[in-house]
Length: 277
Image (cartoon, rainbow, N blue to C red; front, side):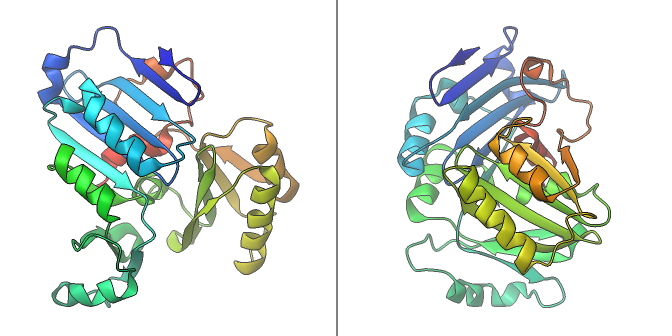
């Protein structure tokens, strides 16, 4: 294990970089953090996890990591990357028309790449249309041109595929959280919020409860990412909700032994990216 003030690297001591062609690389890029995981699909083992939180300039930090991290230069079998972008819309499948794809760009700001991406979420009945900020898009094209691209909430949606009924999924970084509301198994709402402390989180939480008319006594809250038992954010949730559960990594045959000393929910959404199609 190697770590600094804002980052951590866990690597299986038996990981052989020459086996990269049998490995999947998963990258999760939020507005203030960057993490990746390497999964050996032959041995069915998680081989490495890197996590950097509290990035003041995510674009610059991302470019630096992709340029200098030797693990990210390996010839992986498959690469998947989820990226935070403000330019995204969820189009119900009954209204989605691929021939009119460019029309969706009218909803986005101009300071973005011209490439539009689509991802269908059949389980939830919609197709996501999004593009990326220019510098992020250029950085990925330079260092990870073959990577399949997804928006930030894709891995949280992957975690949600097995959830029935009503649930509020909250995925945390140190300085933000992604909220996803399921109503009888359908996505009703999703958004990302920046926060500096539990008081700001409390403000957004009350706003969500009021605007979405949530019944705190009945709805299940599933939490993942950088949140701890009885910390300020966890305590805040308990002020309003009765059913709070840590959202663990998706059930699979992958051995996560290198995470044994870490809270199991830390990297649930990162690892769920492997399920995205």
